[in-house]
Length: 277
Length: 280
Image (cartoon, rainbow over the protein chains, first blue to last red):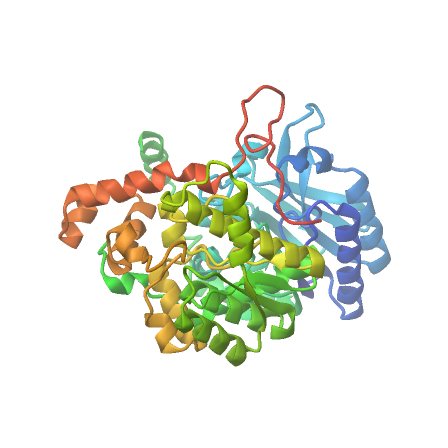
C-alpha cells in the first residue's frame, strides 16, 4: 500500500443528461491527473449525468457495473488511476429503483460503491422523490489505503463519516453537488468531519449552473488536523492536486484521541431520542 | 428572528457576482446572442440592464424604451438614457401609442374607463415588442420583476412578467435598491418611487397600500414561515394588514405558475412532467 500519493480534485460543471459528454470530460480530467502524477481522481456527485435531470433519471440510471462504469474502468486502465465519480444506480432487481451512488473504479473494475444515505428533500432538493436511500457505510481497502465514501448532504450527519472512520477509513471522500446557498455549511462541516475523525477528507463539488442552482465549487482536501491543504476556486471549473500522506495520521491521533475516547453507551441514548423525536 | 431593516442586508459583491454568473451562463447555454429588455427608466429595469451589460457586455444588451403618450414622462426617458449611456447598453426608442390605439380601436367592446384591462393591454403590448426583437436578433428576453411585486402578484400575467430569465426575481425591492446603489445606478433612479406605468401617475406603493420598506419585512417573515400575528407584533402593525398581504401573496400563485390542466393521463404538463428547464 502506498503511504503517500497525490489526489486530484476535478471540479467540473456537467452537461445534464449528456452521459457521453460527461464521460469524455472525466476522461480529460483523468489524462490531466495522470500527467500530473496523481493516483486518485475524484469527480463530483452525479458527475455522469449532471445533478438536475429530474424525470430523465429513469432513462439515465444504470446498473453497477454497467456500460458507464466499464467506460470509466477503461479510462482508469489507460491512466493507471483510481477514479471516484457519481452516478444514478439502477437496481438490478427493479425497474425504477435508483440510488444516488458514488463509485470507486480502478484499472481492474469496480472496487466498490456507496449509496447515499441522506437524501435531501427540502428547499430546492427533491432527491427522495427519485432515489432510494442506501443503508450501509462504504469503506474499501485499496493500494491507496482505506477509502470511505460519502455524498454531499451525508456530511450534515456526523455518524455517516464516523461509521466510515470506524471501519478504518483513512481518507474520507465526499462527492457533492452543493449550491451556493449552502456554502457556509459545507465550509465548516468539511473541516469538522476531518478533525473529529482525525482523517483526511477530500470534498469535490460541482461548479456550473443547472436550472438556476449555482454550484459553488470550493473543492478541498482537508488534513487530519482540519487544515485546508488545497482548495479549488469558487463558482468555476477548476482542477487541483495535493499529496495525501498517511504518516501524518499517526501523530494526530494521540494529540486528538477522539476515537480512543468514544463512549459507545451514549449511542443507545442517541438512538432512543432520535426515534422519539 | 427579528424583523428589522438590517435583515434585508446582503453581501452585495457576492450577490452581484452570482447574478452576473446567472445571466452569462444562461445566455451562453441557450446559444443566444444577447438579451433584450424593456428599459422603462425605473429602478428594476435600469438595474437589470446594468447587470446584463456587466455580465455579457453592453453591445449584447438591447434596452427597448417603449413609451406611449399616456404614461411617458421626461424623467423616465432621461433616466433610461442615463443608465444606457453609463453602462453602454444599446437602446431603441419606440413610441407604441399607435399600436395601442390600433388595439383599442379593434376591440368592439373596448372600455377606456376600465383602467386595469387597458393597462394590462399595455403591459402585454410591451411584451410583444420585447419578444419580436428577441426573435429577430436571436436573443433572450431578460425580465426585471422583483420578489416583492412577484409575490404580491403585482404584475400583468403574460405581460411584464413574461421573460426567458428574471435575474433579480429573488430580491425584494428594498434589496434591489441596495444592489442598484452598489453597482452605480444613479441615486435619483434608486430613490424614485416605482410605477408599472399602466396609467398616468400610477404609483406602486399607493396601490399596494404599504411602503416597500414595510412590505418587504412582512414578505420576508412570511417567506420564513413566521405567523402573521408574530410579524404584526414585531412591526407594530395590525394583524389584519399582514393577513391581507399573506392572502394576496397566496392567491396570486396562478400568475406565477402559469400552465394548468386537468390531470388525465400518465404524466401531465405543469404537474408531474418534471423536466429540467435548462436548454440541453
